[in-house]
Image (cartoon, rainbow, N blue to C red; front, side):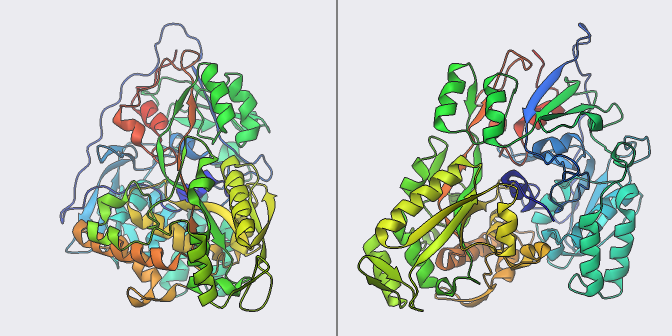
Length: 604
């Protein structure tokens, strides 16, 4: 496999957001009618300019199946190319239906039915049917996507546009995983879906030789002639001939649903992470970007007339430890001592106004904790206040020793480690620098090593690290379940297996003071289990307290977007901060994409 950007990572840990508890009967989601796009007057091409990092072919490719890396998926813009069932309004807690027509739960049969609109076509004019949906989710099963921990079967329903998912572990989060997922064409992936059906129907698994081979083959698939082979469903389509190291173009696909609503004819996407796109943004060639810009750049952007939008991301940077390489940190006391030794406030403030220290250490966003945990459960959380004396006491109790201001592990080795981080992410770099300074004063030596952002998460999954800075939390959904998936599964044994490694190598069976022996895979799944949100709250509290005690990772900072938005050049204007849509997480149901689908983002 290839690389993961942090944006892509946030998407992978859960595609969607959680709404209200589902009723026992199926809920219909009515789609709105479309309006006419464009002004129809000047005849001038109406352009939108964005930015997103992508790999250039041949490394960059068009196998866009969920979980496959190095694909030219373009993050937030993928919704405009391959339609999901819908997008979620985080404040109003309601759906904007796109590909989907209706969906809902049947508690009696433990099923979730998902019906897509009829009359929709792929870019070649062929119809989009339930078979495309079924094929997509069979391939997602091969890619170990998390919904298959709740579902054991998917099949075509009573009509060709409906797929029925049978749940072994009924959960409201299935709605998020299914409706928010991009649907890909059976014409591209049908062969893999057929092999998956044969594998699982015969009792095989992804751990078998055939299952491993299927996973490898799906990841290695590359469309030979993308212009012909890659069928798209959304209102935009790749201009395959436009792709360069610097930029690419998306052109209006008149066959795609929503094309008549959207007021822009083309979308230019400039390539690169923050340092690459900064000159392009400063030159006012970009209308909107989700990159994390340093404070000095923010000031310069503001002086040039950009507005800085700061939506919550419900996620941030955290410290990851390799328990395979560092047996001294398998003792929970060592991780707890480390958490006390680091001043998260200092580590966060170097990022500027868009970064805040994590306070509650619950494993999901501090913003969301009051919605899910009672006052009593919040009071049980250890905040791991900065206290290096307490940290020293905890490490000493765990068998560590300090001589001449330097710590030695219980094995007698000097506490000297390497910390790596994505070199292009200024906030992770700054946090790593701060942590290194703080721990040096405490008596633990860290040697810093930047790794390009496309390689660093791969190294993490393969176990090629000691300490690392990476993302915690979930920008993809407000339900805590998705953050727990990120903490316990994403860069750990269950999902790191896609890279052939164990990631942080944190065992999912643990002993806790709060609950005794726990199966964390079960705990995480139960945090999103059931169709009763009140019962979910009790399970979320268990997962949060387990995370808080065990610290599989150490959350450091919570990030708010510092998204430059330009108006008057190509975009007429952006909504005010008071508009509820501006509370949508930028890496999930991005307000820009939603505004386009609604026809509310107007050309200048």
